[in-house]
Amino acid sequence: MADGTATLALGDKSFDYKLMSGTVGPDVIDIRKLYADTDAFTYDPGFTSTASCQSGLTYIDGDAGILLHRGYPIDQLADQSSFMEVAYLLLNGELPSADELSTFKGTITRHTMVHEQLAQFFRGFRRDAHPMAIMCGVVGALSAFYHDSTDITDPKQREIASHRLIAKMPTLAAMAYKYSLGQPFVYPDNTLSYTGNFLKMTYSVPAEEYHVDPLIEAALDKIFILHADHEQNASTSTVRLAGSSGANPFACMAAGIACLWGPAHGGANEAALNMLREIGTPDRIPEFIARAKNKDDPFRLMGFGHRVYKNYDPRATAMQKTANELLDHLGVTDPVFDVARELEQIALKDQYFIDKKLFPNVDFYSGVVLSAIGFPTTMFTVLFALARTVGWVAQWNEMITDPAQKIGRPRQLYTGPVQRDYVEATKR
Image 1: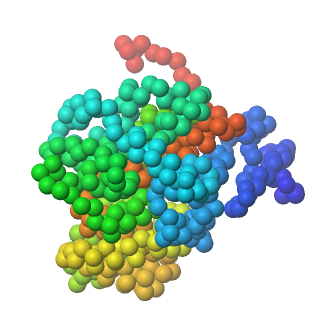
Image 2: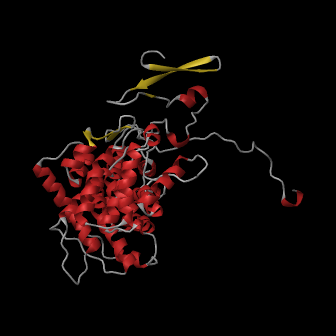
Image 3: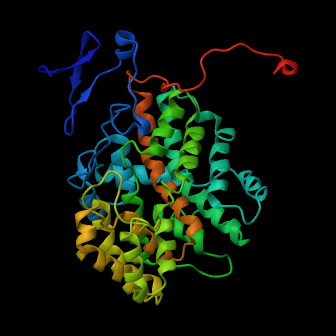
């Protein structure tokens, strides 16, 4: 490898490709002309060794357990910031001044109501429909109501669409929850914070007063921060891919929601909680740990380890303290939480888990916290989508303004039949 280039030998020919360096992290090899030069593609299922874009939003070092948003460590943001401040940071690149944050909060607050006719969409779903199925449909339908913010070539319209999506997602999520219960929808309350307003829309009823519990509000706000963005994951890549075709922002977010719905992505915290319920009581933990160590047993401990993080998930560190504080505050007596605490302690000390770096991840703790607050497991991924909308919107905006961006068009290694001639049905 020469300085600043990578040399590829193919047959009796060699080709030089430029090395590109980011501000931090590994270099990448610019292979944009590879096919034109060599008549060959790279083969990378899952794109695990491919940089699909340039981005200045989020940086992950999985080996060191580092997650940065615009350069700020996630633990600092979770401990000291608010979700609205992190949203501003991801959208604009810098932390806001007090006045900028106040203006931003006011803008988001003014967009929290949704068109009244959207309620008709909910009534078209069965009462037992999964909330994510509802969210896919309703978020995509926003483009039918807000025509004045679908021109992606207009920076002002992109900004309005971004604010609308961030503002309306909690309203739609709360409506999906209320619809499943058969309760009336609750309008937004502009006197409350972003997260406090969502809690009121979710849990209040017209028959009585509702007061937001500050500790629950803080815990949920922290969960939103920890899920705001996570580099080029499956759903973010889906949003970018949809956006690369010129699709309107509402359609792009609906595509991201559909991808997030997959159990290997957004459903991980639900899977972790279901596992804790399967274990049932702390005395059964050794049995399940033994099963996890057994190579012949398909059982896996959900909520442990991470595809990217080969060290402790930095988001889990921030979530662990909140989980313990909230459980103590609520005084919830549930064997599931006892199992979670005991399993965490055993796994952190067991050499098998230490050697394999199977540390509790953010999904392990967030599922416990959301359950303690009172959310059914079907709402877990909806809340993930609510928070991740900020990251999706920021990534979408970055993609639109990137001069190097092209419509996504992956290639393939074809393994089907070679060309053959059609034969009439009577002669086959």
